[in-house]
Image (cartoon, rainbow, N blue to C red; front, side, top):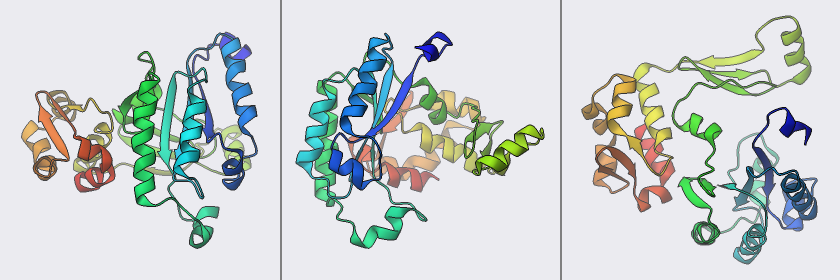
Length: 268
């Protein structure tokens, strides 16, 4: 309640799954009942803009277990959901254990995705971005900023910022981060500004995450390039039916939605 009183109007909770066995497998300290209690607590405080994260492709996760989680989600007081499949990154616990992990097959993974889209939309959570679903138009303005190349500032260890077409990352170590801040020094350990053409291609690839697509004339005007140049980055993808153009939007086809990583890598 105190957070609401000082102006916070959206809350996001990393649920991941509502199966307690899987929560333990991925190293989470909470259980499903604690998640539900937290969500209903927010609801009781009259906070109606609440998002949760869910994951699929978890170790030993079956289609039936995933479906059970989505059935439980239907009763929860949420307005937004982000859905991600597990990706195994270098230098993580899962990366070191990947040879012993029993991950869902590609067929099961597809079934999970297909079921989730159908089930979530039947709940009124409409898919508006590759990984995001919202009720009653409560799309994430925060995330839309990422996908439309809007400037943003990140505060705290490891936080990223994007400002004046330059990307920054803060120091990950908390004591070192704090000492830099108190010394009035920039707590940044990485920054980069891509060459202009790469900036444009990256912005285009990220913008295509939004299912409405990229408004081509507006995009070209913002980046001060021609629409023909944009088409030159995407012509092959249009021919392969990953993308489609209907004035004024360039957007992912159903095939493109399934293979977004392919689309992004070819553009970038």
